[in-house]
Length: 213
Image (cartoon, rainbow, N blue to C red):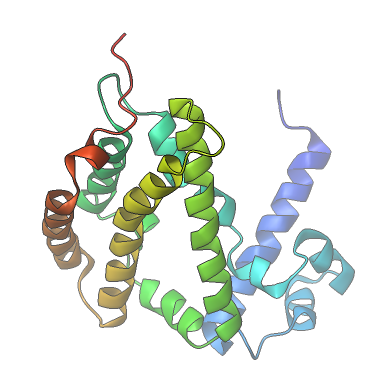
């Protein structure tokens, strides 16, 4: 369905507030900036900011829904004959090889990561998001394989597959903070992915293979 005028204006307002807040956080730090500061800079009321973002952490991680669903989306979109792990490895390699901002391979990502490192509340929220990624992926694997509710295998596999993504993201973040060139980091992470794939067991690599059509 086409987006209505009201919905479009709400989306644009939300994005504008988020963009302004991000700029303030990068310039002044997360702890220093208040919701009042964001409202003043965006020329809206404080209540308007809270209507869109119930907590200040929500302003910083405003695109978290896409991140939480990322691995599940890759798994659901796997090719016939492809396993869940193979699909995630393929997608990760594609993003890294493309030097994609979606995995942090971009100039300025170091500033984003430093804000997180300097704010305990953001580090806590990041840990929580990682748990949500795992739980979401486990639910997806359970649905894709038809596993019983008490079967621990989807959760165990989600941990193994999620390790690939989390390791790539943490490695990229660490190297970008160190001032590395994104293209150089890309090449190194591709090698790292090869090494991680070698560490996965055949059971993981052959889990949730999509039936050939």
